[in-house]
Length: 160
Image 1 (cartoon, rainbow, N blue to C red):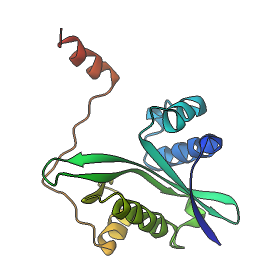
Image 2 (image 1 turned 90 degrees about the vertical axis):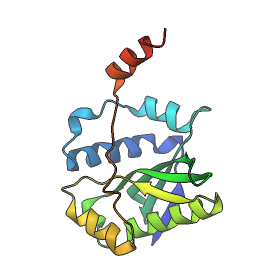
Image 3 (image 1 turned 120 degrees about the horizontal axis):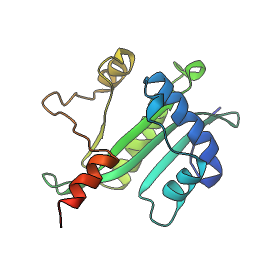
């Protein structure tokens, strides 16, 4: 039986395992620098503004969803941003991803969010098809830009 629950600090090792599996799948393992201690401090510490749901089957964690809230100035309301959704390969095709997204939709409604958003890699056609089938629409006219630590440091130095 599927159970979806809110993660706690005791789940940090499991979450880290999912992050590494997701990074392997996305061909981005070289970008994973976090560890359990960092996850405990930043997901479950007093300054945290990120949340994790864990999906379990018969007490065994098989998936996770990591999300946070942003704010749309155009809507004047919060939005829920799904940073990561991962279901272990052997557990796919059983509705676990849909169950996690449905739970996130309930949370978004409870928080009066105006939208839910997430990113998907261009080559991940199975995920794209899954999201389209749910009614999600790609935001093709937007391009995501990113600064990493070195660029953030350089930009911060310009503020003086």
